[in-house]
Image (tube, rainbow, N blue to C red):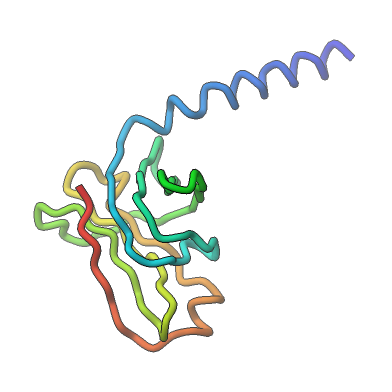
Amino acid sequence: MKRISTLALLSLAAVMAAPAAWTQIQLKASVPFAFTAADIALPAGEYSVCSSHNGVVRLVNLDKHVFATVTVAKSYNDPNGKNLLVFAKHGDQYFLRKIVSPVTEKLNVDLPVTGREKRARSGEEILVAAR
């Protein structure tokens, strides 16, 4: 019983510390359309994009207070001095494909192509500036 209490306390401490870790590196972007990131549907709005460590990015909709935490891969795209969210458009659906940032490699990433995107493919790419 003591071991379970200790594990529960450690888990609670980790959860309480998590929000502070996500605030280290952050971009902001206004996305004017609903989109999908790693099979998670997200509404249009003002977004905060952050990463506490390599391989994971959190997208937070500041208007509707919803978020998605997604697994990403390091990108070798040249950010060319610009912060960007890169979307693929298939029909009337948008899919977040890349986050490009000259500030940190933690936010210079590619998102995986998902089953939902494969089913909707047509080929148009949309760029949204981030700051």
